[in-house]
Length: 196
Image (cartoon, rainbow, N blue to C red):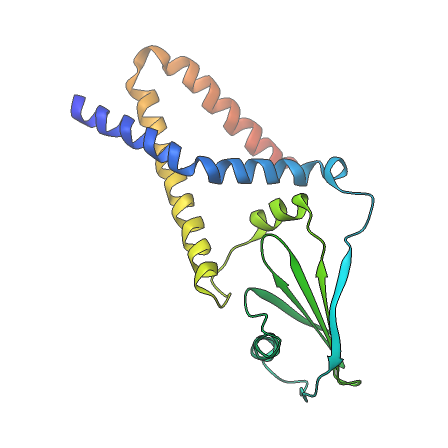
């Protein structure tokens, strides 16, 4: 049992160290989301023009927008993670994002013009982009690596929780206080789910 306890403690210790940057990032960004008025600038994001030019591409209404957006980004040498939407039949919006900035492309099919703008750097936006970044649908290796690391961090957090519960249970003198802490956390969590 001493060997098991030692392995469990080491697992808990090193997993805690591994997930620390992820927990800090999600903790800070969640705090910023909860207190948006504290961190939001009164000024709207500043978009600086990169270029505007003629761009000829016919895009039928029934088309895979992601494929079209990828081609447009490639033509502009702006490949990377993006979202695309078609808010109007004659307009395509592509948001090409990185942690440090965001680039907006607006293609007017009717006018055959492409406008590209870059959002001015802001720290609050960087942290929020980290929080919401995820998924395996983005085209680059590093986007997939980020998604894999998020999955690894999630699994590590679950194992970390499990090893912490085992440590708590193995320390008989602390079971009452541990039960109070665990019960308080569970009751507050379930109460909020029920009420909200």
